[in-house]
Amino acid sequence: MIPRLPDLDATAVLTASEALRVERREREVDDLRLVLQWADIHSVDPGEPRVMGSNQLVRLGGDGTPLVQELCWAELAVAREAGVIATERLAADALDLRHRLPLTWAAVCDLTVPAWVGRKVASMSRALGADAVGVVDVAVAEAAHQSPARILAIAEAKVIEADIEAHRAKVTADAAAIGVRLSRPRAGGTIDPIDGEPATRRLTLKLPTGLTLDAHAAISAMADAVQDRLPAEEAETITRGELEAKAIELLIDPRAAVAFLDGLDLPPAPRRAATVFVHLSQAALAGLPAVARVEDVGPLLLDQLSELLGRRDIALRPVIDLNHSHAVSGYEHPTAVKQRTVLRMIGDAFPHSSTGTARVDHDHCTPYHDVGPPGQTGDHNDAPLSRKHHRVKTHQPGWRLDQLALGAYRWVSPHGLGRMVTPSGTRRFEPIQGSDGAVVGEWYDG
Image (spheres, rainbow, N blue to C red):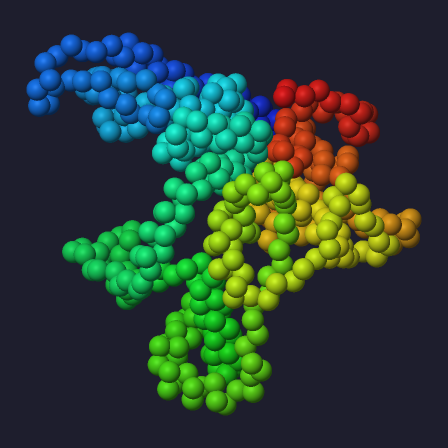
């Protein structure tokens, strides 16, 4: 326990929090190492007769991990005050990390990647053969300084890429399971204090990705139309969920929907637009299997992308050279600048952020001045930030942000925490400040 906690000031709390993070990650690595040592101790054949229920060597991890005694984990589970199955899963992840994902394991051991992230990567990639899992290992190691969500997104895409045909089989099987499902009531569910839903039932639509997005857009558009036709008093108090429920009520009754829409002067429903930015790897140029990443959707096979885009009008954009910048003299960041910054950064430029780029503000790192020089607005002076991070930087005194280069942002918090954010992730540094508070130097801890 931390002694005399009420005596800690803000700086001491931040220092203790950083130290606790390091200690927690060290203990998590020790936990994995102890499990591996237990596996090593019990890796010899127990030599028992092969009768039903006897102890034997089994493979808990993926292809390439050593065999261990099947019944050895109960005793370790007791010591850990954990379930046997949970302990076996922990062992499988640890064995995968050490024997199949050595680069990821090294990043976990040096505390760069949290142990739980390493475990998740191990479980995600377990079905891959020993000769294919290296693709995932290299990608995760290269992304080690990214946020956990980004590491897992990269790992997910690489697992697909490592065995395209296996994933295509999963896609085919999943696509065959489309349909509409009504939840079944369970005893006690109506008054359950946490999950009880006494007035509602759940209806699940399992549809192809493109159709799902279009269905959501249609319900949203109908809800807007319903709101426009409500009396002013009701329109001000109705919730969005209630509007969507009214929209669905209309959509499931074709006659009511026709009668409702007949009174509206609506133009033909436009096809939804799609803007595609293509990042080509050397492998893709060589005609090898590739995986596409769609904002707010995730990784898709190229034939899945074709199905998604087939329902949309595609807008082609000229190639954007991210090695050069673009600047204007007005205050607003134009679309050309925003696109360059978003494509370069992939996500939010706030330290350790996992926020995507679909909904970000574009902040001037060096404040814009009406009487300042021309060209103040450009990707040389543009930080994509979520609204919350933008508010923190703008309204909480003491935050300092400097854009050192295209895609390189140096942050110093009000109490002196230093972070460098680039497209490859967030790294810690100790700022050395001058008498005026400006950063005059820094040293990095990696």
